[in-house]
Structures are given as structure tokens and as C-alpha cells.
Image (tube, rainbow, N blue to C red; front, top):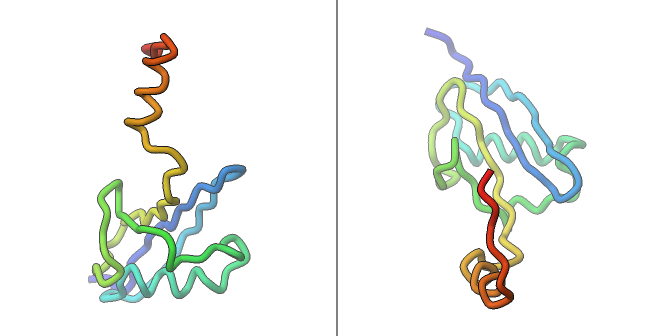
Length: 99
């Protein structure tokens, strides 16, 4: 059994996407991965304490143990409530196009 887990850490800022691969010891948590990322140039200026985290689209806490292949996602706060935005579009007579 491997003593290392390989995980990806991703964050999308408004102008670019950040993706780094991390090798951590078995038993490390999401919080440990964030501690490692704080020292990386790719994440300079990002305040991790203000962001929610998740793994593959499911919100999780920083004490969650990592498994090999996990993708840790950093979620920025929403700038608009999706329901409210839809109500405004409907009020203006606009509809969403299906792709």
C-alpha cells in the first residue's frame, strides 16, 4: 500500500484557472493540502479562510481525510443569487437558451 496520496487542488478566479498536483502523506486532510498551497505562487493573494472547499463537487470540511485521486475544489462566493437572476430575466421577458 502506498504511503502517498496524489490529489489535485483547483481554483477558478474570474480571469484564469489554477490547478496544481500535490503529493501528500496518507492521513493528511484538506486543511493540510491548503496549508501546502498557501506557500505556492499560483495561489498568492487568495484568502483560503474565506472560501468553501469541496471534493468532486461535494462541500466538505477541512478535517476530511484525503484519498488518492481526490480533486480539492475551492469555491468563490456567488456574486448574484441564481434564483434572483432568473426572476430578473423572466421579468424582462428573456429566456435561457437550451444548449
